[in-house]
Structure formats: C-alpha cells, structure tokens
Image 1: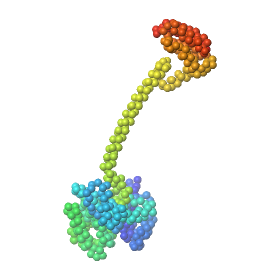
Image 2: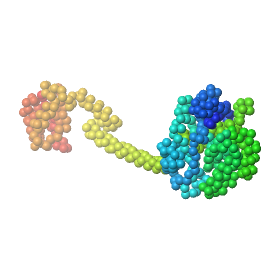
Image 3: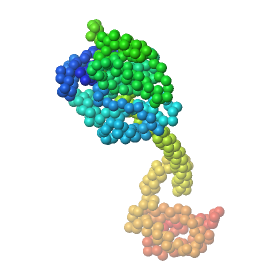
Length: 480
C-alpha cells in the first residue's frame, strides 16, 4: 500500500513543497516546487495565494502533511531542570519560559525533548521550542480551510538538521547551518541529536564574519553548559542564501578551521526524482521540504507542535509509572474477581447438587413407584397428571360432597386415642375405600362406629381385618 507525504517549508519569501510517494518499488519524489510570494508585506494573503497554486499543481488527496514554520515564529532555549519525568517537565516549562518570552504561560505552546547524551547528570538537559498559541492557531485554521490536518508542525532549519543527522551516515558530531537571505538557523548535532538551536538575524554586510563569530560563541556556550569539549570537523550548510557561495565556503573554512560541506540530502537517502528533467531540483531550495517529508515518512521524532502525532508515546512516557501501577492493581483485581467467580460457581454447583439430591429424595418418598429419576420436575408433572385423571386428591363432587370434606370428616371421626396409621385412601364415585393398620380388632370396630355416625356417610363395611407384622391390617368400604 502506497503512502503519499507532502513536505511544506514556509519561508519569508515563499513556500517550498516536495511530494513524496512510497510504495513497493521504493520512494519517489512525485513533484516539487518553489512558489514565491508576490507581496512579502502581506504574509497571510500571500500564503493563501501560493497554497491555492500548489493545490492546483499537486494531488494532495489523502496525503500526510509535515510543515516547517518560519524561524521568526519560534523561540528556542536550552534548559536544565531538576526532573526526570516528562510530565513534570512539561508542567513547569510554561512558567520557566514565561519571563524569557514576555508572554503569559497560558498563551504559549511548547514542545521539548531531553538530551540523552547527558543523562548521567543530576539535572535533565532539554531543548525547548515555543510559539504563541495565537500564531499556531492561525496555521491550524489556515490548513483546516483546505480540510488538511498537519501531522507535523515544526520549525524551518531545525527539521532539515534533524533529518540529516538521523538518516545520513555523516559524522555524529557536526554543525549545521541553514542560511536564507536575511536569517539563518544554526544547529549543533552531538551523538546524532540536535542539542543546540540558534536563530540568527543576518546583517546587511560582513555576513561571513558574523556567521563565524556566532559559531564560536555557540561552541563556547556548548562547552560551558554541557561540560564537554565539542570537537567538530565539519559544517554542513544549506539554504537559498548560499547559492554560488564557493568563495564564502572557503572563507568559513579558513576562519574556523573546519570543513564546509554543502548539503544535497537526496544523495543520503534511497530515493529518486520522478521527473526526467531533474535540472529543476535545487538542493539549496528543496532539501528543507524533502527533510520534512522524510521525517513524517520515516516517523522520526522531534520537536512538533501537533500534539496528535506521537501522542500515545508522549502520554506513555509522561505517565508510564502511573499506567504500570494502575495495570498491576487492575490485574490483581481481575485475578481476585476471577477467583471469586470460580468460588461462587463451585459453591452454587455444590448447593445445586445438594438441593437436587433433596428433591430426588422427596420425589422417591412421594412416588415410590419411580425407580430412576432422570428429570424430577417432568416426572412429577406426569405423576400428578395421572393422579388427577384417577380423581385422587381432586376437588370434584362425589354424591354432592367435596373430596376435601370427606377427608376432613374421616380425620375428625377417628378418635385421637386410637393408634392407627392410614396407608391408603381412594375416593371414587362408588364410595371411599380406606386401608390402614391399628393395634386391636376393637379399634377397628370403634373406627367403623365413629365413621358411621357421620352425617356424610351412609354405611361402613369392614372388608377385611387380619393380623400383620405391625398390627391388625384392615380395609373399610364407606358408602356416601
């Protein structure tokens, strides 16, 4: 799947754009262009005019955008803070920079990174960049009007130095200088990390002398702040202000005693210009926009005012310890919950088996003819239906007498003093058949006599009375 990235470098006098396309066959520069402002006095209107022209020239649909803002919009500082956690550093930075930038803390948008080469120090050395929120909002609103959300918003000059230091095999320690007509950006690359960024306003005369003096001052500052000697042999230069500057390069080499190398970034990466006519490719103009496209394409981390990009990693770094602690507590809670669920399931299963056993015992006791219980509920339903069909325990009328009244009358007439156990009672249309066991024959006669005195029953006949194991077994036939 191909990816298209637009690198857009905004200068004081125009914009430079490079459209990079990456696919299975490699990375190709699809298009590139420099469009100058017609009126440099009206920046906002000029920017709209040139971007409208760019939109007609380039296919921007679905592309990722990386933007570098002019140096005048951004301020750089080196700070040493007594914190290691990124979250704490970010919280104190607005107040630290407030006095230096002459802006209120709430009006500043800041980004920073820690210098890994000096991590053994007690304090943390950081490089910061700041921009007014009002200025940043202008750029967001500008691109929003074109339905574009930049993935990267960084600064001109720094972005080129960053891409070159990370992508190329050039020396880890070198100076980088991006020169325009009136401004320049000076960067120090130490162990492939940009550790100093300086914005320089070029004088109208003696520019080379000014550049050399600024570099010497920056080297002294580096050695004083970081406590290490900055042994540098190379100065890499780029920008529209160095065209046809062979004489100037030699003058810098002689003044500083270091080699000056003019940047051609395309020679340090495996990409090619798609157009057959590559004469329009001017490294001094195009390298800045190409560097932006490479930073987005290669996911190179650096200063970025667009908080959405690398947001997850930044949040992770800032709150890593909190996330780990919360994760451990959450995992422990889940384990406890899982154990509790297993315990509850086992407990419920045990209760269920216990209750089921009791139900089965009741079913067997109530219906002894059921030998094997498979589904107790269904089997009981079937038995109850059978009993209902036989008019047992129903409440239908038998000779105008309810079955419940018959049971109650028999129960009331049998004396409590008689030891008797009723084993069978059948109520039907022909009368009542009662079977049981008592202690003596006289008890049978007494039961018969008591029942016969009832107003419900007409006649009681002793069908049988025989001695058994537990007493005298008897059967009574009662007419209603």
